[in-house]
Length: 233
Ligand SMILES: [Zn+2]
Ligand SMILES: [Zn+2]
Image 1 (cartoon, rainbow, N blue to C red):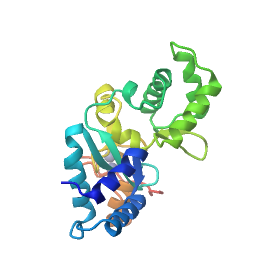
Image 2: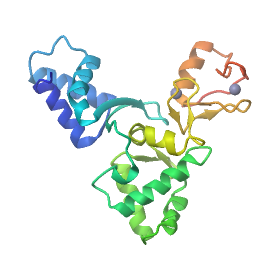
Image 3: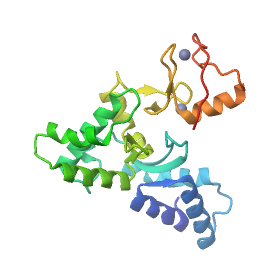
Image 4: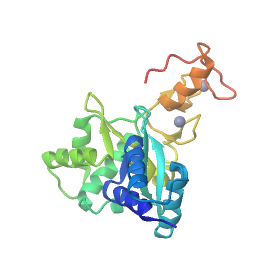
């Protein structure tokens, strides 16, 4: 059963959708300070208690890793498959249509990123018209709401929030394109690819694995074991 501390934490998730690990820890300790009777619970059990209570509403707090920097995040996601058109009530249907095209473009590229110009040009493929400036404003909103992330060259990738929320959707609609990480088995859009067998690894996952292997870095794929270059995260 949720107590006031759980409810306090859930409210943060309801309003933000996504929180990084540091923010979650802060809220967790605040809720401990403000509300009594949960001292025995660690963070994992605490989240589990919330998840049990929100499960009937098809909600779940899921933990995931931001692919480019390896940072852990927690997202409140829908457990029923989310078509992009119902992803958020804050965007118009046409905007979500554009997001759908962006996701498709990102998934279809080898490096999991789409340049900002190419992204804006996706408006040409919309049935209903959208100006390029409006598209730019929309992409800024998506970035602010943490659905996408831009790298230093302005290239757009999907952030951990999209990966967690759209996991089912991506796996079903783009089964032939979406690769899973050879280590954690989660969807991997950004990451390194083995030049020999094509297995893809998250940078963070590769870094963790290779830190145990020392200088003898090899592809984790069973029948491959090709040498692997240095992983820079
Ligand atoms: Zn991984
Ligand atoms: Zn390999």
